[in-house]
Image 1 (cartoon, rainbow over the protein chains, first blue to last red):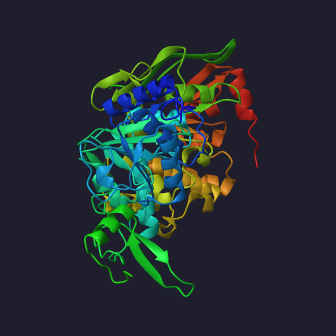
Image 2: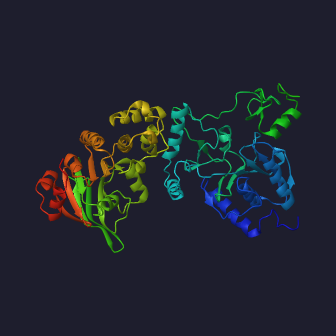
Length: 283
Length: 256
């Protein structure tokens, strides 16, 4: 523990990242460039989120790390261990007990409070990237609010699939100004982004961008008048806890095509089961 | 009558090399102007300066805007200029690939300008796109195909539809028929002529093909080494060229 500075990064780096975070909070949805550091994990494993978490952590914090909603997958376990070792902070799997939650691709089902910070890992922060390859051009489009192209993507979806088929990383407009990629969360989670009590921070390590949503920010998912946004999920109840309004993972259970749907938020599912809720396949 | 576009003293140099020098002219509503000259004579430089793709070293490009009357587009702010470029102006590139989004369906390509100016109703966007594809003779069932699946002539027609969908008043064309075979060229020219006349468009057409300007342009400007050497009505310049270079240009056309 003593071999590392608190939370791995040196103080000057944390200071630089905090400045980027503050700027991001001051201009919601704007991508702030920052000098991303090499972290002891590969790109794509949450190097951006880890740096934001490291810069935000204080010794009294309680950290929760989730990966696709789960507390017990490789990514979540290794990042949790990383901060246990380098920061010595308390960790938890309980959403309500955590003061900082680093997340990959989900927002917890339980609603968050003003005392909490949600840190997202972002692979590609630029929502316009696959439509406009030039960074110079996309920056200009952001600064001049030229967002017609974003709707071209949704148009293509409808013309090809009959409905808006984008189901994750669904673009949103923040406070009527910046169009933002909410990281690859399912669009089921999009309505939770807006008006949330907790601070939401987004870190992209490889792409060297940080952006943020302060509490109670207006976030609107883009859509067409005749094809409105719809927060979709699998049309089932959780097989373990019976929850009907949580986001579900489809799990294939044998090689003859049998499957079950379970909550992707493991903590949510477990606490429901502890409270006595039972799904149809609960053992 | 106020000219739609008034170009005054446009000069653009690339270091010591002259792109175009001291070019001035007025373009009136509904008028089609042709700019001809050999490769390297500064036609495209001039066109790009007028369309705002290049910043001229000197001179003014005054456009008669819908809201505030004549404004110098060189000195106006970039958001305003970009707004003009996607509403009142259109730019048809020589290579359709430069003007189209190749990985987006034909309908999406036509709809992009509509969405850029705020259209948010899928059904209506699609209707307008279908109407425009029909006007440029692309069948409606090709609407959801990508331009990569189109022939060169179709791509060029798609580019024209995409540009005209917002009802621009001024169209810049850079060799619109270059690289197409003659029969496709003829159809494209026919189509362009029809559209320009029907919509009362003003257009500036840069080309080295004299047949194109004969067919489309009301007035002609001949450029050589960055300078305008002769201007006049198209038929007048082509039938009775005064300048030695224009005479050479006219007599160089192959007769079949």
